[in-house]
Amino acid sequence: MSDYIDKRRNGALIRSKLIHWSQFVQLTGINPYMLSELLEMGWVESVQTSSENYHFPVKEIFRVQKLVRICRDFELSTIGGMIIVDLLERIESQDKEIQQLRRLI
Image 1: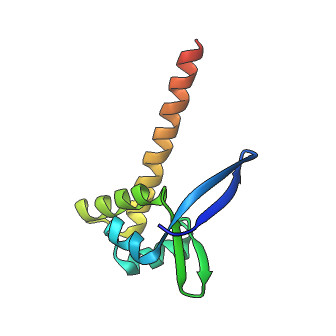
Image 2: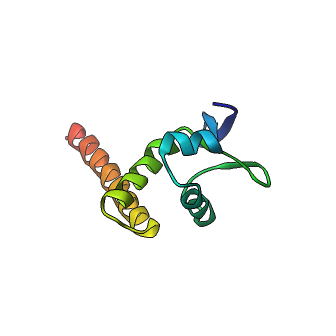
């Protein structure tokens, strides 16, 4: 793991570890061409340090692994897998909100 990126989220400073392209490909099992597609579409978060040098936040590993698995297991296109992962993330977020609301009742 290489650098860090500092971001502001809801006013709080968040520090995230970054992984180089080659490490990211190895950890996720993604085809480099597919990763390039994801970058072009803006689906995966990255930091570009030079014209061909990308780094990725550690949090993107699980998300991309899920995409790779869904596309492989269901023989889906990248776009189809992206839609499913996005919907799964939305459901997970809504489940968390429901659980928080139940705690307040």
